[in-house]
Length: 448
Image 1 (cartoon, rainbow, N blue to C red):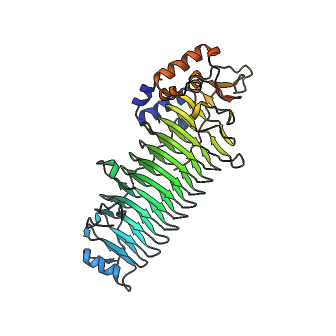
Image 2: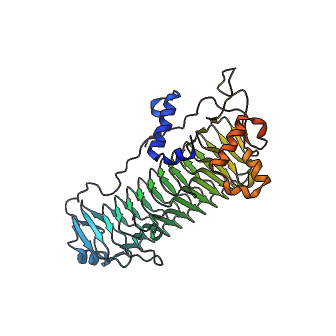
Image 3: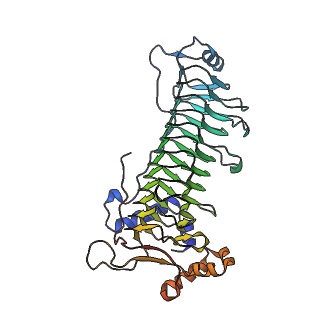
């Protein structure tokens, strides 16, 4: 498959193509592709219990929120309640179907400063547009805030937690804007919000989903598309991203200075353009990446000084790297980095190491390579000869650094194709898998 063909494939088409190939290889039907996620996030059919307190309009709602002796549970009937709200005491605010809070367009629509507040089953819209103030649909600066079954639209920032330890965002939809992407705010932002949970949310057309300076964050069963960073971690240790679909963003997941992350069961697809990366790490340790579909990206996985020490290993296991322009792009050959039981399928280039280096210190074992042309005479499922990646283009760029400008182009691909046909020309060894798998390993699936 040529670079242009891979670039033209849509995300859904690319994943479907992988599924067809997997089925042809004899995998069971329930394992040929990643399961779809429900995208029904937002308000649900919810009715108030008998005797519930209802606010009649925006003014009555503001008064009830401001009253220290006011009701601890406030309900809204269908309709639009106007005004920027501030919640300074513990309470729950629920909406029946069709209830909406509409801001003034000059600030944040709902600001929460009290612990133990619950916002449920509302549409929240029309924030201000000040980046300096980070005007948002909902901003919480308190512990244990819960936001559930909410749609946020026409807001610069969607939902911002911080500091907000133990907060929960669930079954919520954030709609950004298709206009002027450079002026968007973050769809979801967690700042100093350890032990937060973001689950079953849909974020579209925003800037980033941000997790910064927060420990033990759980992100699961979310969908993020047509944004800049599907998820951006920084200094956020011991966190989990699983069972999510992050597609058609500029970068899927990027992790900086964050240790002991667990990335499992995700689809990371369609990160295109010069900066497109499915998943990337910079100076992060103790990471494991398992059972993900990393499909149709410019770069599948990018690693820069990850891990920083062999004592804190980083492992990729049972992932599918398919139809990427470059499956693996490494800043250097890191000891402690390993790839085992992955499926590298029809990538334009398997691996590139910056500076024309190699990945010989990286451990590869038991991976499936669609380029492998070996044999298995003893029928143990492993190739009898090692898979070796050699690139003549690496030799040329080492000798003539100016040729780095052409790295990844069709011309360089032709050079490597010639070297593959005439192996004596290819002296630059990039990586070795001593025990290549003859059949593609199966990514594990989880119930959702």
